[in-house]
Amino acid sequence: MPSLTENRSRNRAVYVLAFVVSILLGLASRRYPTAISEFFGKYPGDALWAAMVFFGLSALRPRASTLSVSLLTFATCFVIEAMKLYQAPWIVGIRHTTLGHLVFGHVFSVQNLVAYAVGVVAALGVEVLWPFGSNERVSHASA
Image (tube, rainbow, N blue to C red):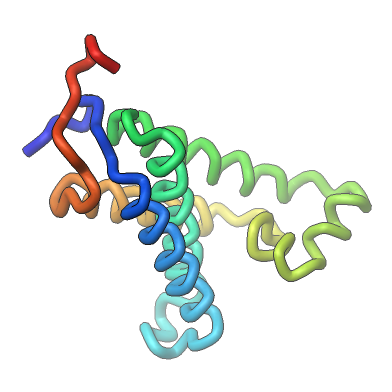
């Protein structure tokens, strides 16, 4: 099993595809919330949003370690969630658009942070346990 801190060589096309698939699944989870379970509510979409960020950052940083991508993903999710506490009229206006709502949301929620953590761990698990899109590992010296 590869180390989480080991630099990688990712296939960008595969990660872009995973990015798009996670968007589609996230949108489907909001459109058909009972398809998974009413117990989970809107949180599968939030977890998929975090997975989307992971796959997107992996496509942008194909040689980064899984750990660094995971930490950057969670930091991005945390910052986006914390931004919900800022309620200036211009950002509220953006949040009321479809794209703005999907990216930024409306209301700060600690439960969202938990869902993001689940999404990051799930995406990390997909990469480590099923290393799709990963080519040979590269050494730290050559990265």
